[in-house]
Image (tube, rainbow, N blue to C red):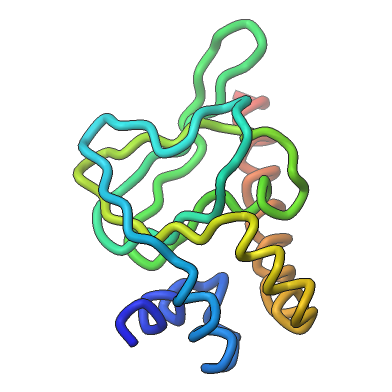
Length: 146
């Protein structure tokens, strides 16, 4: 029940019914990251979606010439890794723990299997993913104007 509650608290899953929350929660695993530890590395394959339970993470994008830009900071109830899970492409940014951070990890395999079995899950999460993409895209465009 606790994992279901944590998933429900994350915007990505907040619109899902209890039935789907229970299914996804049963597939989640808890992970703890020390301050400074990488959750994901830009360019590597993605293993899943991380839902932050406690702590704080920073999203960092590195350009082809080695410049690094801080894109976002996420805390409890927020999520990272959704893009790679949906499109199968390598991670578009690195994510590092700013402090000790506890997460739920929902693997790509489990999440995609749930969406194939129950397409209504995808219909609930896609608007959230698209909104996040637009926000990130706008932030990157603003950074380019500086």
